[in-house]
Amino acid sequence: MNKEIKVAVIDLYDNETNQGMRCIQDIIKESNNYFNSIDVEYKIYDSRYRGEVPGTEYDVYISSGGPGSPFDGDGKKWEKDYFKLMDDVWANNQNNSNPKKHVFFICHSFQIMARYFGFGDVIERKSKSFGLLPVHKTESGRYDPILEGLPNPFYGADFRGWQVIQPNNKRMAELEAKIICLEKERPHIPLERAMMGVRVSDEIAGTQFHPEADPASMEYHFKQPERKEQVINEYGLAKWKQMIEILEEQNNIWATRNTVIPNFLKNAYRSLRPEPALV
Image (cartoon, rainbow, N blue to C red; front, top):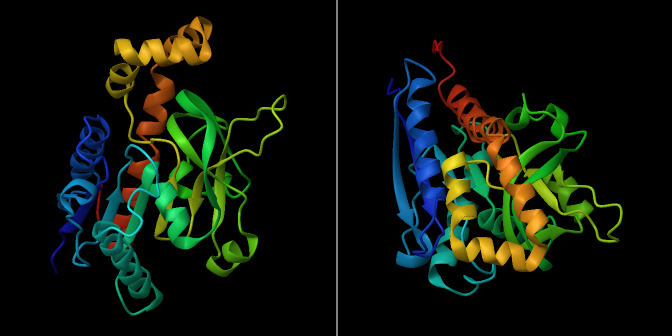
């Protein structure tokens, strides 16, 4: 039997300079060491900028974050191809005789995922979220495998101008989907807390925050002069200093980085290659 796992990375950064793709690739490369009887191969597809969308020959799909509106692709060929891929993955997974395909959506992709599955309203935020912020597990999230080992709350890298709110309970029930985490509690602000993570099925999940982020990527965001100026202008100098203090406690970001996507991949690999595979 071929032990190789094939992973497709879907790049939705639209040619914008970013750290997310480097972080995702680092985690996939590390996953080659999870089990000594499983080899991992991956390929990147530049979907928004070049219109490259993978086919169904892959075992695992990781769809990245990206800039701008999650409605940017509406009516465009790349998004139609992207949704066709999701149709095919979903259809494959409904047939119990087929090997399941596993999908993880990050930030921008999480918002597109919400549009595709229809489990919540995707709206623009009143102000952008920016920083390393607390994320709270729901009751379902306490037992979700991708969050296993993280404290409650834990910290997530959160950069978004959009959000998913107002869960469609009927659609969630049809899918048997679960909200696994929510944004930080803000009792002084009379606004609904956004969904920060949803599990659609055993094989499909996503997070609004960036679980791939590491200290180097966060420093990249925080230390750019224009970013620093933006944070100080929008949130004040005290908020900037607080962000730096949290960032310097690197265990906060490493815990999330070393848990969420690694747990997703480990569970996917075990499902796809259930024969004994020693760590």
